[in-house]
Image (cartoon, rainbow, N blue to C red; front, side, top):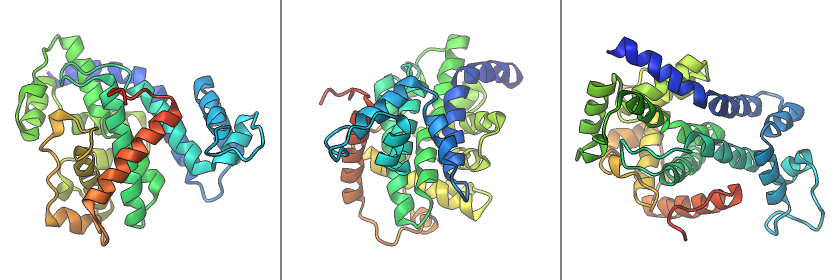
Length: 290
């Protein structure tokens, strides 16, 4: 079954490859020892809608200093590379999350907000842990990739919505593997490797439900941070029902994440607020209509 499903999985992934490759290209460009601003501008200009959003944001009251910004290059300088990266990748993620996931009874809007919230949480935690915030943000955006792919595989196979009816994430993961060949973490990691993206992404995504199993200290730390981020997101409005019990943060995970000054309640409030603000800046409607 797995060999046949692999062909279907890769075919489903083809439709998502451009968006994921653009996120990866931007990430790589911003992590060069000397950033090539021309390359960054070119990447952020590839999608007209994204360029329009950057221009609009640079001219809002929050950023505008009385000067009209009329080019994407100026908008990026005005916003700063980090903010431009956050907005651009959030907008790209809207393309990854453009379809509902009936297999899990998750709407496209809820999936997108969960992905952005996880990215925001990872960015905040990475800063606290003295790690690269862009890496954290990107990992958060890609954490749900496997679930998107499994939905498309389930569509091709004609599977009903069963994943959301199981009470525990361990049962959901087992159901995914039994019926589709991989669970969502495995599917996401497999396709990230297939696309040839940064290997850090695949290794962390693969261990997102079991950080202790990571083969390197770096992967264990990042996947532990991802587990903490998912826990914090579960405390906000942007959780996914299918993951309601997925985020059990043990002492071992906290130690691996190395978060010396951590207050979950404060972080969850910050994540919720930053998620709403970022999605508003990106032009993504709130599925709860607030």
